[in-house]
Length: 342
Image 1 (cartoon, rainbow, N blue to C red):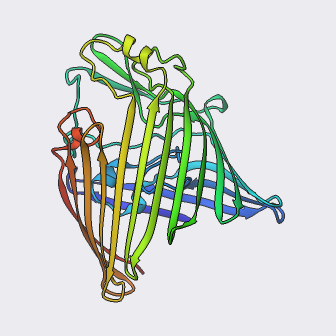
Image 2: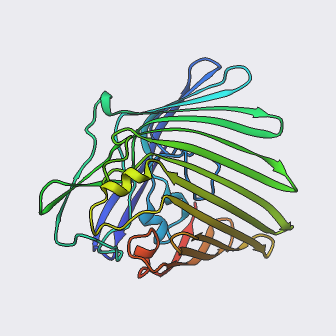
């Protein structure tokens, strides 16, 4: 399988290629399936909230209104699917590091606390000692699909290290994740639960303010149809920073202070009309502790089996320059996509 794009970017006035996916599938006997190459890996049960899915994502594409499939970046990986009796196992080996992609200038207005300093990015070098490993074990228990997760690799967003008075080095600290998820029916809908412990391997004591502290993360979600063509989904997400006292003691003067507890609430409404050829949707994020938000109203119309038209908005809100959506508050945008499939 191969998937790639040829792109002409009007803002940069240049043409480039984007190798999105390319892999081969084969089986080793009846109980092992193999996929090798660049491919999309999706784990967990969250709706646009990720705990055990520590695989690369393109938030610049997401915040600029590209089709949702562009949010996930392919991992150059070897994936083995095992099917022992009574449960399934998925093992992923990623020898080459690939980071998340975040909004950046000149396409976005992004908060920069140190605008006069030069940036230098230092990604983990290729080699077995810097490989990423992930394991997922899944089993159906009653009416619920239950999974356990393990990951060892790196944070996919950078930490700032002050190399000198004029240079900031962006690095990717080591990370291990231990988690679970469960999803099943209840009260006429679907319940989802997911949790994970983020073990910050380079700063377990929490004494280095430039490296993310270890943390505990959890989400709970519920979705159900309100009518035949109207669906609702809600989620609550929370994370708690470990060693918060140590973080406060070592936080340099003038640095923005993170909260120990972060919370997110999401709402998704989806209405189908015209024999389900017209979809109206609204997705919203809101953080009670940082008081920032993102609203995404969208309309998608399938003209016929091959032609579709999408139009939507990204509306950012927040009064602090250093929170997730507050730093993007100047980036409200309208987007339109026309896609022809053949």
